[in-house]
Image (tube, rainbow, N blue to C red; front, top):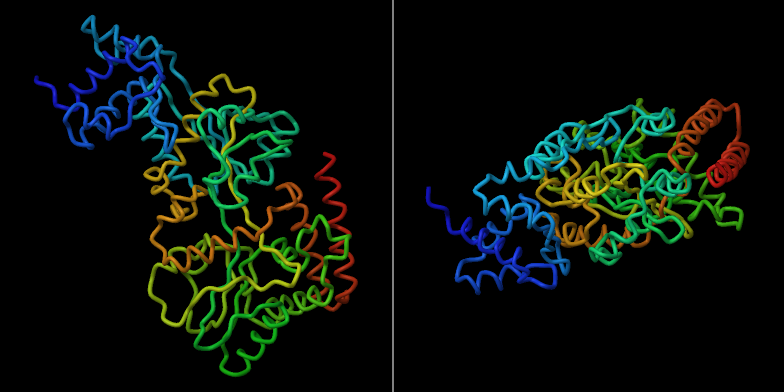
Length: 457
């Protein structure tokens, strides 16, 4: 059967690669190939994709270009010359099973689809998805993995314990740099100036409000006053879908520096007052830890303000809701938003780090990210974020908020300890068994202890 034009071009390029025609170790640009061989860009691109599927080249975005794997090129080229199929040529390649550890509550279905696409693209690699309820407990129990998805604040913890593969040289060789990513998402992958993971996604808290009914509150005192006044006037309610740790950052700025007097005690009391009203005086559910699907269940007619992480409102913002706008999350003079990230890391003892690296990069591709509930506009790659289909004003707003945010100071283990301890303290306060100042002192004392634990263990 006669080969198509792009298949013939792929054969020609393979012959030239084997003969050493491309001494710089990479192919010319797609436009150069199209011009040289008098074909259109789509044909040139399809030809190169054929070579990539055979493992002869690896395509890199930006300045990285299309790099050649000489050993694989000679293997495939030799098999073609002897009239063997490519499958036969690759049959001598060791089959690889890649174990990917991730939180079972996140992304299982899209990961299964991504794994199937990855194996179709790289047929010698099989992705074994390992969903677990608690990643940290699984690691402590000795569950074997080659790569995993981590919360960004945990990278330093596991790098310090030498669990993660050092990616610094790989990132440098492939031309990755901070400027290609949303502010602060890059920084959460570093331990002692070395890179141990790559950013996968990000989110931060924002305020959604009905501008026909209320003005966006700037401080927590404004929030409390607006919330109480609006409920009294027309029964409109407010909802808070932000974790308590993020709330603390909005009154303390960098929690690690709280002993320097950065905590605004007046604002802290006002925050507790607002929480008390939401938890005691309103129906259950007005203050909850963020759930990305919460907005699907809201009756907007009953609300005037909703505070939520951006990952929970992206779909909402793409639908018409007249009168509703976004604004910065209420915070005090020294307060900061928390920018949380998820990252992809490789196990230090993985027997197949090259394939693990391929998988991590594959999950960052725009066409693969379209499979995930976390939308492409939450990609840490700044070009993906800027090209998403949100209004330009919204994208600029989020980018500004991200630039002025801080990374979490506590590890996931520290965060679990925080929530295990904080809510009993809040319950005592809500039940009038403890006053505001006593509750604040206990919370700050706990934070100080947990920061020490996180830094030492």
